[in-house]
Image (cartoon, rainbow, N blue to C red; front, side, top):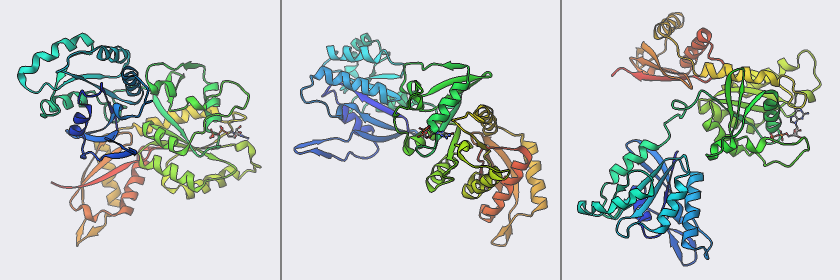
Length: 435
Ligand code: GDP
């Protein structure tokens, strides 16, 4: 969920506003003896858009901090954490030095900043907002948190600035890759081997937190970004303790990725934790390549890779569609093939097929293998369409959704794969009754 951070001086009405917008009435959290304070995080929703609000003022500070320091700290936190920053000022008090101070900090971020003037309790108070144009943060939005005035307009403005859903649509032509797996499988080594092979490395663009933690590179004209890999990159050959890349971080990286490199240790084989991580990527609809790393450590004969592949196919049964690559980050064996495979599965993930061919294939499939029946009614598929990609998503319009059986859906999915490929990507099949 996108994060909206609320910044402002004490007493401008941040928490009132926070509580008005938040979904749940606030639960008061007892943090320290004698101190009650509002929740810092709250989920909110407006016109179907969900976001999480942070009240940066609620975050504990050094007690001897001056107010100005405290609010600077808030602004910086907001810049680091938020997708949208909501800066609240007080229309009754008017503009203060610290408002200017915060504005100076906020003007230097590329993140969207909205300026709300609170305590504009009636229409005739509206002139209170003009001086706030001086903050250089665009049009001030007058609101009254106490009287619930104009909050709708404010939320409209917030929602407009939220990152677009799926993010991919508005974004670049970069292929977003998450390198995931258990600690010690060789993720960092692979990342280093991978970017070591590539000629052009676009260095981090400072500015947003994401840019600072991701690694961008271009190879053969294709742009890639390795998500959350800053900590994985090593500057020297000397083995240095790098930040442990945890499983939880892996999962978060998956959310932002198009393609997942699921790294498995050749010596250990597929573990329970691997299954969980891979399952998450599958459920999230991401394309994937299964990378069996440390291949140099195995004693091999002519059947080793075949047997290993069979084992993966049975252990990661839900990921039959993913190509398997045996690598050694140490000797660089097959590391050079990774980028072409990533590119290939990314294309499959983003593939759209023609509606007429799609319907032809489904109708051929139902001719070979008649659909199941339920309540004495045989399933009929009237029409199939592909409304979406990443992952390719199909809607099947049928007479009787309940008659559709899991195994029959599996059969149809296999037919689609036989016809179109869709290698490396999960498919989403949705069954709809006729309206
Ligand atoms: P991460 O925790 O998944 O990032 O794993 P690292 O990249 O830190 O690797 C863990 C250990 O495995 C390190 O000692 C690496 O040198 C070693 N390692 C990584 N890849 C390979 C490989 O392909 N072959 C061998 N023999 N060792 C490897």
